[in-house]
Length: 229
Length: 221
Image (cartoon, rainbow over all chains, first blue to last red; front, side):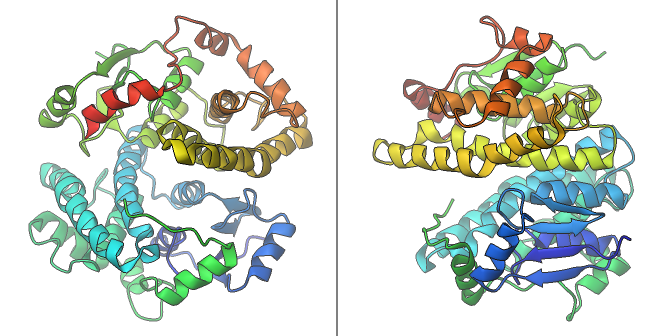
């Protein structure tokens, strides 16, 4: 009795957003339970649902999966978004590793002080335009294909689009030196499942607000300061 | 013309050590090219060998692979250390990702400023003994098997052993309350390829010492 996957997380992006993107890309409907209170979190803990006491957690195929990377690997494999063989998987893993590192700078952003946010914005733009975007621009230029790996839609494409849109939220013209990425963005955004996810009313989450940060801190009792990278 | 995998990194554990462990566990001989100076890194960056300008980089099967997770995934799959099906891979991935989280904590200990070290050690011990070790102790207890997943040696076992040993370097009796992890440690250490890697003279790297940090900083900053 499979049922839809059920996502347990806060009502915001964090480490669950990439999983939402992947499920959406695969055209898989999913349910969500949002953590609002400490009591909800403690109930999950006491029920033994969180293997390492952390969210994200996704109920899928009879498992209570934790660890966002493990969950993403499973979904990507199950829904054929992980390449056709070991060599394609290697490329996808490398590319996703890069976008993961870039998104790492964005993940901590909402938790920073106003002053650190300005510094971090500059770091994000610098890393994106000098390290990450050039790498993907070159991949696309070199093979001239529509998708990053194997001439076939994969997790790498989904993750790169997600990263591009997040960086654009910090600097709207950040793709100006990257014509291949601009075309890539338009192309992938037009894929029906992705197009649907990008429309208002989808399960895609907005930029994290102060209220969101406050909820996370309260539920996890995570009051220490985050530092800029 | 494949030849042996060639590892590009500094002469230290860092983000390459798990890859060394996995290759060793699989019985695969490998070569190493150590970065000693910033010029060594710059040279690799300039010749286009590093997709994101970073190491680790491993030359393997005609590829210049970067991103330690990607490299580890490739090696684990190639050498049958990644479970027999999707469900086993899911378990292995869950365990391995948690182990990587603990590893990150352990790895950064030497870099802590003097006034933060004691606090950091307390955090390590707390997370290790309250969050991570109890889970693996329970996994072993519940199925009573020799290996973490699928009754077969996998990367989860290799990476857990690596981390248990690193944790003991931080606090020698950290496994005191975990009898099954203690016997797991002994058992996996005795696997021939692991036993060999644990002997002096292998390519396993020693713990980072504070005196080595300035040299490393010069390469990367």
